[in-house]
Length: 473
Ligand SMILES: *Cc1c(COP(=O)(O)O)cnc(C)c1O
Image (cartoon, rainbow, N blue to C red; front, side):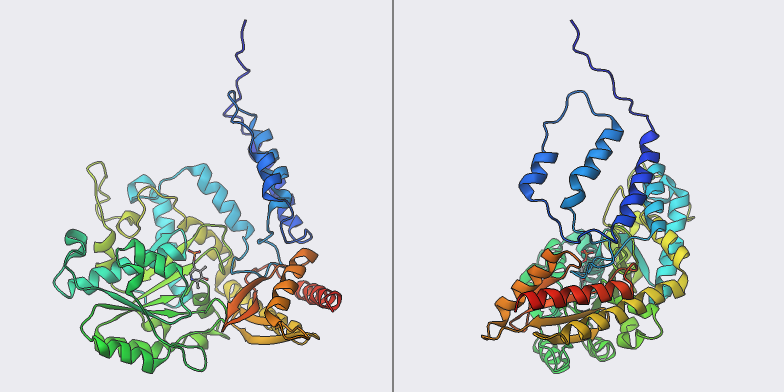
């Protein structure tokens, strides 16, 4: 009696070619599929939630099941008519580089674990600074997203601000140190607060300014906060692209004020920093290069698959001191090449900068600028054309690639009407938008961040919204 199964061939590579073909088909299907997910959690759980097999499953079967089971359980965020959140698409070259990176199985911890990847990452770091027009002397880290870029940049800020007060937080910790405050406008992204929590600063360290009549950090309010406690170690967080309005802050003026108080200026430019790639739009970011640190994403406007974020820090010494680590088993590169370990919070890591390298090389500077310009133009079209439909109203005109509209209820309950219409648009399937609350009003966010969107997609989306509005009376 034998119940021994036929062994699954773990080195069978036919799954790779098979998957490449499936992936190409899938990639094109994003143009046509309903954007919203249809499957319920219960249905998905039923498909995925099998008991773990004892004997293994053929790799081709595993991949086919993944693809079939998930098909109607996806929000087609990689497609051209997804206008929710800020997600972005994936360039074929980036997907291909991602596959190669997985095939290489390289650890991007130190130079010696992968000299080629470390070198490609080093060049990508320089290219990113060039495209984003940040100071060439900046150090950088290639992390998983803007959240971790905040974490990295704020760790460097914390190092410097306490060094200035005779404390080395890397050895002494925060014990007995004077509290550090983070000053931000009410338009901050919550990922900053989480980074503060991770760094032992606590969310109570956040002090909020007000906004001026253009939705930018109010300078008088900032100055009042700084003056109240001029000696406190202080980080000021500015937005390069408010998630709702696409708005920017007065970088030049804030940096001048920060200098008087020895404060560190950090910029959350998750998507908006990419506007610096565009000659047409970069005026919005005037003075942004004067800050001390910047956080941005590669998986949004650069069109990389997840997960890519970048931190840039002017103060290399503080950045290095906050992250550097060594171990007995490291092999010294004798000063040749870059050990990412000295700049990143991770230990073992995917050398993800190679994917940025591939995408930047594929796009070129004008390719990036073109994507930025087109997304901004499409956002303007969507906001204006949806806002002009009967029963709709523009709440925030398109700035950058963001804007907001709402839908009006004859009986005055605009919030309920807006929520109902946004949901009905998603159910209709042509396009995907998300709701938000802004200035105490429910609104529909419009965000364009995918290089695959075309004028035809905008036309189809506006027609779909018009149909939904007509059906909603
Ligand atoms: C997306 C986003 C973040 C968070 O970035 P992750 O890549 O999700 O970590 C932070 N700030 C802004 C403005 C964002 O749009």
